[in-house]
Length: 137
Image (cartoon, rainbow, N blue to C red; front, side):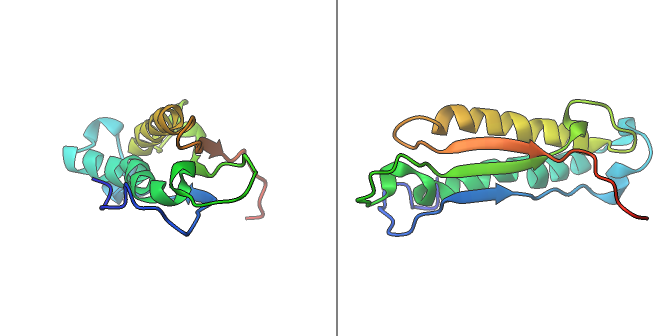
């Protein structure tokens, strides 16, 4: 259930939603990936990937074109952007469980883009991965 907001018209419009949440227990980020416990796996994926699905579900009434009362002639749509990392597709030393969580996040974003991208919702869904940056130590 979407918190009871599925069929309510909203006078508020959310233009963008940014998912920038990630967390893994310290124990899951140290040592061998093979030592990842089920609890650490579930916790990491719940916070770092499933949360995108959860937030999108609750935000949909404010993002979706079908729920807006508008007189605008614009075809602009709302968007959901999730932050990801290279470790979702490449092995990054010591990234451990976060690699699979970010891969899961990207798959959720692809599926949401498919389901929400066309009418009646017209919500764009993308992932963004920052490139390497130079910083002073």
